[in-house]
Amino acid sequence: MDEIVLSPFSDLLGIEIAQTDRGSAVLRMTTDARLLNRSGTIHGGAIFTLADAAMGAAVKTLGGANAAVVTRNATIEFTAPAQGEVLECRADVDRREGRGCEVSATVRDGDKIVAIARSAYVLLEKG
Image (cartoon, rainbow, N blue to C red):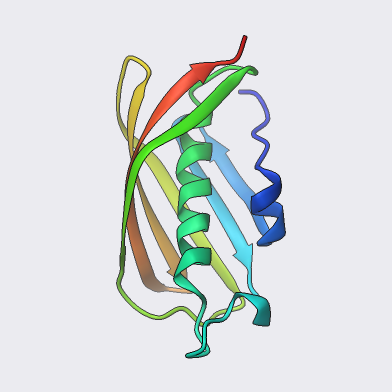
């Protein structure tokens, strides 16, 4: 499997790859005060970005070195506030049909699930 490289936007949020396998990825985001909302919890946009990056990385594990991933749609359900220093997201490709992939992800703050996301992606080969 080729090395997965995250976008520069993921770098801005402190998102790193912890583990990948064919059809799955685990990413971590180290949080700080810049990612807090006015309630003092991690901003939902940062959590969603972690989930999106993890789901995209899971899809990319199915492609080759020239694979590109495009999000078709995405949903997220926030289940609890996140306040930890490190959030972790596991994403798995649930179904693949041709270039299309359906993916699910769970974001955790320690043992607590803080968000569940689902998305559809298209896997492309860059020319």
